[in-house]
Image 1: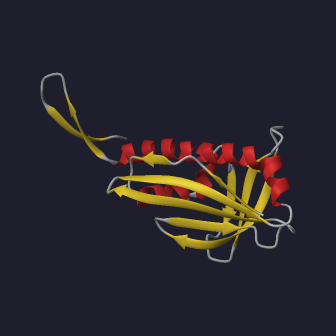
Image 2 (image 1 turned 60 degrees about the vertical axis):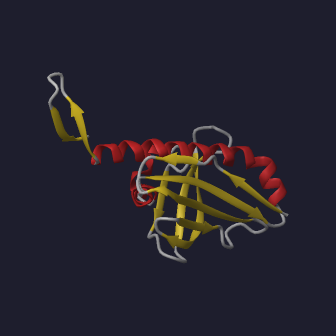
Amino acid sequence: MKHVISSVTVEIDAPAAFVWDVLVDYPRYPEWNPYTVAVSTALRIGEPIDLTLPAVDGSGGTFVNREYIRVIDPPRHLRYDTGEEMPGIFAIRDQWLTELAPTRCAYHTTDTISGEYADIVLEKTGAWIKAGFDSVATALNTRTESLYERTTPFTVELHHGHEHQGRGD
């Protein structure tokens, strides 16, 4: 049996390449990512990626889920999977960025779960995975737009009708 869990799709007011840089800036995940609270990886094909996630039971604890990098296609697609880490379960995580305009893109992520125990995993953790993925999409949107806004020149009209060129930092 195969199951696909998809996040919401968010539209982000920033170029896809800028969003990609935020997405793979793993040391900063604790600053913004509510679902993947820490990551350890060399970000190379075939190498492990250790994802620290909040406990499924909401106890406040965390656990490390080891997966393996399979696709790095900036700024469009990032894929990792569980490899042989969990007998009877195989999960493929895809994260997608789609350019909508030069300074706008869309993000969503999916988890494709298959294997002998896929039905049980979906029953026990499907809602938790979906909520986590949705929270990542929303937080990535907020984080990226905030950072991009601070790096983009803007024009502000002052009280006396004069314009001021500035940066949003």
